[in-house]
Image 1: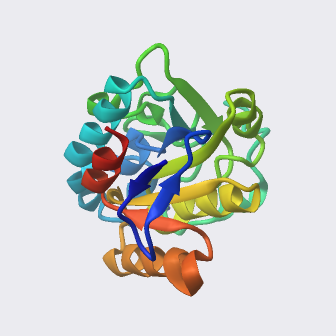
Image 2 (image 1 turned 180 degrees about the vertical axis):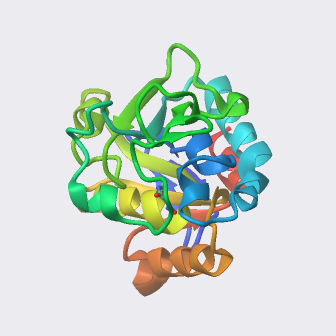
Length: 221
Ligand code: TIU
């Protein structure tokens, strides 16, 4: 049994529990000027703060030979997997599929859709291409986790209250024991990040736990 110091109480990982690290949408679209986050009117620079800590956590999982799943929010070039409601959202001139400074906004394979170089996946790591905010909706993630017997998830990435929280809620409903890693997730709205951390661990951990990267690594190593 591994015990990780977490909130609202210690997170326990039974010997039979298989863990994975989930890294949500650390893509240029959300981290750089000219991407989707920027065209929605956000200060994308706010998200950079977590990159070194998230890199340490990723390196820790790599050193322990534990599985890592990266996700990318994206759509097919013909936008057939993007509901019109999602295209219409936002107030700027550019929208999903528009030509932006880093290629077509939120379209699979465009330069802006790539994961930032510092956190680039290794060839043995899985990349999940997701059309929704949650990583389970319309993806192979659940079947892949089941195939590997994974039961416990450490969830990181951006943005905390949008794709990270949606994914954690989807995972929780599917029976996964989830930890949101506090210093490996960030929001364009600091108060939304704080509220998300508090709401997932409220009511005795209604959605799961939160812990720092250092506590996660201390527990796993
Ligand atoms: N806009 C925003 O905060 N987030 C997204 O649109 N996607 C993710 O969170 N990845």
